[in-house]
Image (cartoon, rainbow, N blue to C red; front, side):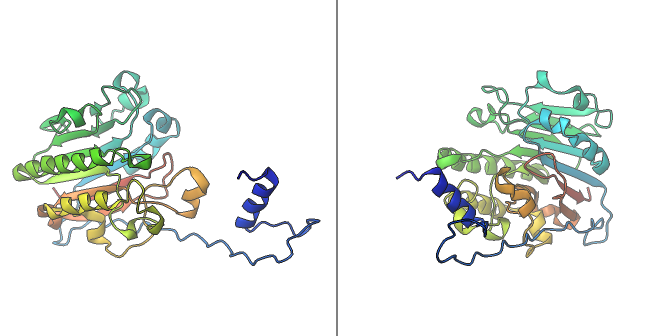
Length: 314
């Protein structure tokens, strides 16, 4: 039955703890409402610039799901990039065909080597980019399977001592309409990474569209049947780790709570820190001795995701 607007307003106000004490018809038994919890925020600690074996970091990689490159540029995203000054910048969900890229980014002299991938079928959908200060040995697009590669989700750059892969993993969608496809993707993408790892160690970065453990999102109980936290998606990530890869953030901060990289634009979620950790640096286990730090720059605005940064020795 559809409630009248007055009833809806009263229910909303009650849920928010905003009953008017001066109302002419107050409820007979006003229930005590809980005070809203103060948000628990994550403070990104100072960067660690030395590996466990005492070597100094000499490579800095930043990854950011920009949720629309053109809007992100207008929000001054590039100003922050210049402050962070990574050696390589990886972007996801650019939603921009190469012909429509803003000159602000295509002309950046700091990054003379720029690579773009977009969807073949839908302009303004998906898309990834990689900008580098040094020229890779080789750059490839996709993972060698047409059903996946047409959506412009992967760029791989080969450097002298490692492969860098940036990815925007498919979302299982509202109602999990793409969960079966996502499961196929997870298997094929894991195979691709494992084949690279045989040749050289791999640094994988991007929006992996999964919160791996309950610690990786604010409300695990209410999201077990939602995209990004289904048992199938979490298992897919577990299998990637079992294949010889490491979640760099959890390696360094195994018990850290409230550290998220995505917040919906709705319900003031970011200010309340009601979020998900969906963005990762995943490394070949052979790179663990070279790991210095894995950062979540959660104070940085400009998208519904925040940037993440890796310090490593190469």
